[in-house]
Image (cartoon, rainbow, N blue to C red; front, side):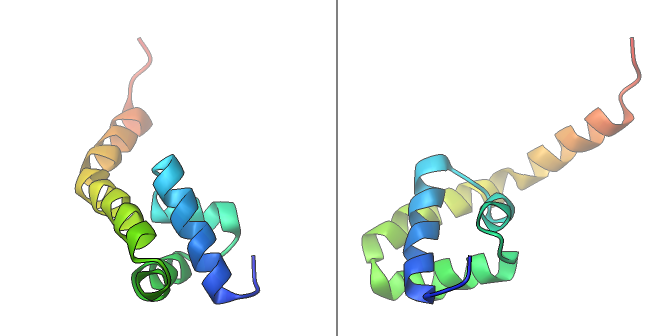
Length: 83
């Protein structure tokens, strides 16, 4: 999803706030890099729509705090022995 970075930032913010998506999931959904998602949310969206920025940032902070749990679950699943 190329095009206007300001529009993309707003769309990303709405998507993340609505779905609770991670940066990686949002990047995959919009066909852009994780660093672009991060830049759009932290830099562009902050100035374009402060309320939407706050909601999206809350989701991203929660995801960051939970990432060690998701990683542990993925490792357990990878090495699980069939019963």
